[in-house]
Image (cartoon, rainbow, N blue to C red; front, top):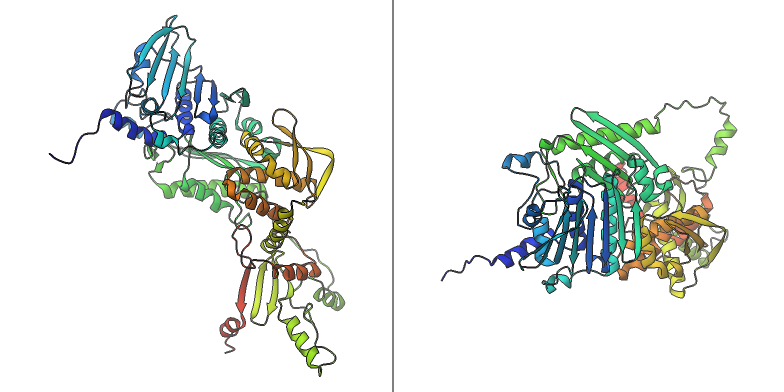
Amino acid sequence: MGIIQKLDRDVARKIAAGEVVERPVSVVKELVENSLDAGSTDIRVELLAGGKGLIRVTDNGAGMAPDDALLCFESHATSKIAQVDDLERIATLGFRGEALSSIAAVARVTLKTSDATTDKGTLVRIEGKEQPEVLDIAFPRGTGIEVKDLFFNLPARKKFLRSERAELNRITRLLTDIALAHSNVRFALHHGERRVFDYPAVSGLKERLYQVFGKAFIEGLLSFDYTEGERRLHGFASRPPSARMDRRHQFFFINGRLVKDPTVQAALNQAYKNFLEKDQSAEAVVFLEISLSEVDVNVHPAKSEVRFQDSRAIFSFVYRCVEQALLRELGIKEVYPEKREETASSQVQEMHQPGLIGRPGKPGRPSPPADWASQDSREAWKAEISAPRVLGQYLDFYIVAEDDEGLLIIDQHNAHERVLFDRYLEIDKKREWPRKLTLHPLIVELSPAQVQSLEENRDLLEESGFRVDDMGGRSFAIKEFPDIFDEKEASDALLTLLEEVGQEKVEKKRERMLATLACKSAVKAGESLAFEKMAYLVEELFKTSNTALCPHGRPITLRLRRSEIEKALRRR
């Protein structure tokens, strides 16, 4: 007997389902996309146990006739395409005909639907490999699908699901992302008895951004809308210098489809490269509309990736459009310096201003001791000059220092981050965070994902000095915050913490929180520092646990050895 055999149909269905249904969020994505393709203007998602117990999606779309309601559970059954040529012009979100078949293979599914052509609707109930049960019922126009006990027949897959809160967080983020692309549709999400969000239909993207992220978010954005031939790029992105240290607030939609696309993302970030600090990224909601023949959406089972016919041309188009928007917004102008009389005394005075390199006397370098003959004095002087000596500041970004081996270029922000991080570690060990009470509560508006993160990490935040009270809806009041911040910094720090800590694994949450607090309270790149402050910062840096890297892993110091300088200048 040969070793190759045809798989049992049930086994084959479960393997195929594994490509489409990875976790509850996969189910929600497929069902909501089907609702949108059906022309729905009102979509409600209800969950139990983060979607592991129940996922119910109800819409007011076109609905289905009885025969279609039964046929839709068959593998590769779809209303979206009919022949091979249709794959080259896919305009719908779903098209493979695998979603309901895959979901029904690994869960207990009940479908209720009606196309309103008769006074009856249809119920189809199916569990795993069992034959479906079909009944006539009363049901309004639209479709409702219940998915219970996901992976009840695949315990090996079920044990890899994350906690209820983590799965809910994934679904919340997905639905808010999808809502951005469909502002004319109402989206509501409920978890048990709790309403996570309810976004009524609005007239455009700006209004939807306000619903999801609040007023402060949209005030920091610039809009763009460019068309070249059949290509159009439009949306919103950060107005420099506003930016983030991560790319979690970059959303890309191609012909209305939410995707993870490296070409469009790279073009956006490259366009911003000369307008933001290194390692910072723009916030952006980008919509690219192109001819259906220019893009292949059939490259990933979950339809989360695409392939362009000419990726170089797409990159160039996106880059050019974003760069034009930035130049228009920033209004590049020629600057003509004011004429003034330069006197010898003013030039000498400038040479002695703190922060300028090349001033006489090398401030910061100790003079030789008066009692040079004393051995103790000489040794003390040598020990003192072995530490880095600050020479000045370059571009208001970097501190320039020297030691016996050469020159040091120190990133002032990263250096201060490291100093503060080490201090905050000690404070956190003792749970002795100094707190500041607000005279008037600081009101912040949180997105649904940030609300989830707040609930999950409330104890951790309170231990670090943040006390936040629910004010109803998306509004929350900061009543206390760490004494290292002023009020504006406290609000920004809390919002960043909710984003970053919410994504981190449990064992790394506290370290990420401390790194974020250090980043938010450190001196900024572009900030002019007094000479004494630079000297103190360098001194403290070289007492820390790691003078090479900041808490986020970025380098702090660049060394130019004396031997390299002399070799380059042909002094040796």
